[in-house]
Length: 290
Image (cartoon, rainbow, N blue to C red):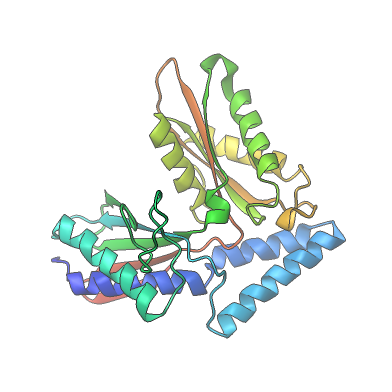
């Protein structure tokens, strides 16, 4: 299949808008699950308000949150797919710019030193574009607008291997407590373990933006997810940091092999408006989903 770059541009534009306006079904189900299990009356009311806000935004075709975030595009190129990689990235950037200008969306992206805003949600290195490969015979694009409220709550610790798994658990719990209500909980707590410093932080982001109901492919990571989820929801942070049982929808873990003298652990959080959208480009056309 030869990729139509005009379709890529249109998909990149549509995905940004779609992600900002429609919450994935797994997150809505996560809200219902938390609300049904919440024992604190105040927290239950807060969750109810959040659920109503989502419904109103979708019913009126408005944004779920005013923060359009840092635009992130994850791309998977399937077997037999022909595409110019550089042109692919340029098409995605054009689509991101068009979404911001034509919709229009708030431009939240600035130069890190001058703070100059190009007013197109693009800039040096932005949108962030990750490219990988798949066994499918299609081109898949996932769009994630990562808000600053959650992104500002990111941590890395180069733990000592002798401290073992307990160091990972303690670090994650401490990070959730430090974040408090600043991440707009209930959150998805993403945890990266292993690799190098930069890979570990990337793994935490991948974990934080995974769909609810998914599990770490590493059995040890999956076990850690369950243990941390239970611990985090015993902290009493609660929705919006106002107290209660519903601190996190889930804790997601991603792991990578590391050096014998290292044990990196990173935490990256996703807020309750865990937005994402996906498009799959096939010869028959574009399929949209989550």
